[in-house]
Amino acid sequence: MKDFINGLPKVELHLHIEGSLEPELMFELAKRNQVQIPFQSPQEVHDAYQFHNLQSFLDIYYQGANVLIHEQDFFDLTWAYLLRCKEDNVVHTEIFFDPQTHTDRGIAFDTVVSGIHRALEEANKVLGISSQLIMCFLRHLDETAALATLEQAIPHKDKIIGVGLDSSEQGHPPEKFAKVFQKALNEGFLTVAHAGEEGPAQNIHDALSMLGITRIDHGVRCVEDHALVAKLIEDRTPLTVCPLSNIKLKVFDKMEQHNIVDLLRKGMCVTINSDDPAYFGGYMNANFHAVADAHSMTKNEIAQFTRNGIEASFISDDEKARLV
Ligand code: HPA
Ligand code: ZN
Image (tube, rainbow, N blue to C red; front, side):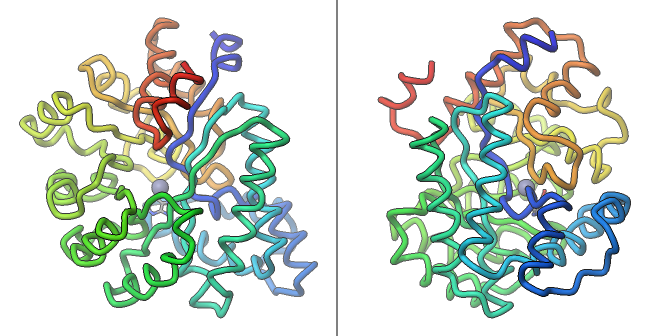
């Protein structure tokens, strides 16, 4: 099964580019940019990655991003992730970035977007990996800040296909961002949102009805509402599930208890993704292996995760035909 998984073409739809910052690159950038970080070695950074919930991860994740200053840093970060995609046979990836994490530190929006975009273009040419870019609003900040961020994205519509919502789910429900999502939809952006990761199934309902989203990031707590599960199956609403992330952040205690295979067998459009691979212990292949090790599955079931990924992706029907 290991070889089958490694050789399977994959589509990644839930990846925070800042969450692909490996400790080694964090150190290199800290040195290059003369930024102080509270660690003596990459190993110390690895050792610090013990989380008990989403917030304990977010605190360290935002701190790590401080080493990203110049356009070249964002290029290097994205390029390193794309090389890992190549190793894991990821043929298409849709990546999130968190502009507010950088603009709030005085880094220009254009610096961030142009570094990431240049790497994505290069990967298309050199590595044969296609991609899309999605900008996330930080939900612990207010809607006015999200609106200002949306304004900054408008001149970059050619590079950004959609907007999403991430950061602390508890206490920051979808309705807080209804206006900015409506404006994004009016501007022609697609919308997605993290919902039902740590927050209740109601957040999935509300993200669908109030934010016009076309797929749900995480969504594993949908199982607390049977009518919602039935509707997600009927509508083929995609869930971008992140198995290793869910274990690291204690959404499930053990991979054996994860509901992704159950949801797949119920006919839901679930996909496997790595979320923040530098922090959660693995990229795409590692996530597939972790699920397959804990749940016995047929090759056809494993391949269904890729078919679902293609179906759920924001690529044109022509391009989809190329991938199947
Ligand atoms: N959830 C919420 N916010 C995030 C995540 C996540 O899994 N990763 C990066 N920001
Ligand atoms: Zn995420």
